[in-house]
Length: 303
Length: 235
Image (cartoon, rainbow over the protein chains, first blue to last red):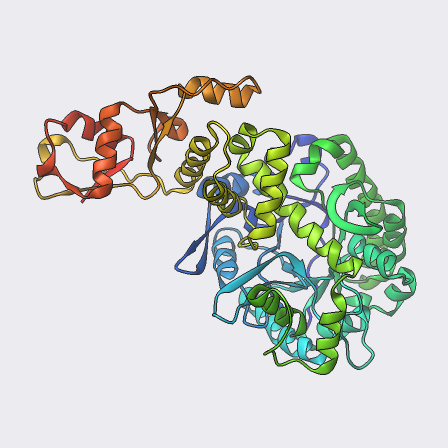
């Protein structure tokens, strides 16, 4: 599948219930996680996801009139035994009612099959090794997800904490992302906070690493802030964006010609702590970068 | 896939990776993870997120316990029970089942755990279809009376309004009383619960054993009330 850059959307925010007008007026689009509108039951050993119809109706009403992109949590694209088909069923349901401009998932896995055939849940997304075996598993899946809805599919780089992930061919995370986007035709959701966490936790230079990334595949950027635990920077979406991450955005934005969206992520449960004033400031700062750098890239591309 | 296989091995055996098709390098990597700060923080995040979910979705039961008992029960549960889902309700149901099995010797805790479990199930139930409760004159003797799968009757050792009011308001819990108070939880009730009459509790209990309309003894009004509440179904 050939990578086709999607239309440029601007600055967005995660859909949450009850977003005040002061925030709504600052966003060009919404990013929706279908999982948060769902319930899950385990029936006869099978996971069954279904929408809370009232939550879905409320969400569709709230986001009407703005472009929508999808950011999934539960696909488990990297599971060796197969992805979570229940997630795709709810994504089909959302697409039928609200066509999205693109959709994305985390480059990780949540489900594994036990020796007795039962599905085990990791509880927290776990990383994939940077190997040919992983590429062979992921690339056809990513390609199929792009074809399924006829819109781009993006994979998000992911914060991990396990040391020395297996690799072959001398691949590190950046080389793996480059190979994956090339072989699958998918785009990249570059989470700069995740990238920053990995750089701090594993001691690499984020700018040098970003310099090796195929930035023409970056369609969307996530910004977030988190916490530090036992010396590890953790991706928990509980804070404003730290300055080093803004600096990475300043570096990437003018160099990513297909960048189409910047999203600030904060957990719904953390919004009362962060405060809507601070959320608004993050969105305004992201917009300033967008207007400074992405408008210029657009003009350059059109010239 | 080495990480996926590693998860499988931990879930299956708790230790070791024997029997898995791993290269020596993969085996060495997995064995080398034990004791690393990276594995510890990965486990911490998983526990933190599970704990956050059950603290939000099992508030009533946790509110019955004092701080020490609450923290001990949560940590015991997290250690004893593997994660089953990313979602709040399955995590809370798992915790409430664990609480009922471990049966802490604290007044009211088991009653409230049963109540909260039933509330979660009733909240997740599909809405009752229109016309689900036929009027009494249409009932036929052979119709079976069964409990709604998401309904329950539990008994409180104190008046429910006093007990729940104290839990929600952070007040002193009422002392257990000799006579239990039945409470009905069903998907058709406003707020999903109300106090039940002893007759309603008795009929609900009999329906769990198997009952037909012909078995009723001048209980039409009680059955009508339970049908309207969505606690019982006719088939």
